Length: 399
Image (tube, rainbow, N blue to C red; front, side):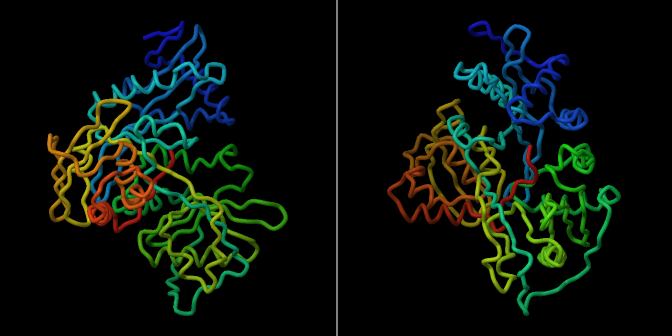
């Protein structure tokens, strides 16, 4: 496929060095070849595209074969789009739409019910039917004055360990966590090896990885700074509330550290454990995982729900023909979703349905913004109860 001298085609082996260069040009960091090799193990045949202009790669994208936990604990195959780049010399020439049209045709042909991505910019992917499905909060915790409430448990059981010696325990805890967490992703060993390789370029000026291990969780973190030092948590995974408290008590016990920085989710209970919740300061709130439902009935039938619901959805899709009118009937947590010609009760676009899918956003908020349209306010409340998730949605890892 070509346009204006540009050629869109599948990636060949000789393209990868040029793709690495284009990614570094746009994102400011050259990916280590070993890291690239780890991620390439997750790319199916025919899942990577480039746009070339003569000898140069000027656009690229691929999808990873991922497995996503949805509400209720079912694991769904997902096409995780990554390494999307258009050369700064070739902006505003339709390269992204050209690549995405072909890439999503291939995703549909491979019968993935959902496509996913993480977005470097928030204004790009809504027009392709992607909605932000999880929210990430950046916290800065003033460790110097943090005190746990007198009635907060002190479970103990945390050990200081060397990260590279405990991959199996980390992986086992993570797997228990992601199996119950909407947004959790199966992490293959190649990605664990890549994470624990702890290369200098991955440290962002921080120390080598440190680790704390509990029987039901772990923390990986780095220290930063040369004056007052602070901790940056790379990953905190707690399978139980007791593990969460124990790991946070250990982090807050590091007396020479001024603060603790972490990315977490809006329902993290840490502020309720402290005598002064203001010491947990939110420095940023952003989207994390974006979802596009490629097969609306299959995706909606995969998850479980919190309340019964009968509704006809009119789903708009301005990018492909994956929308339409669907009768959704939920009973005892399970859904049946079929195409219908009945009059719609609710109208929304595919990106709004993606935002609802893991329970990370509420129908009432989307309705207030006119992103979900109906004359029945009670129906919106029922959708809140049905699509909500008892377990907060979190992205398993960035891709």
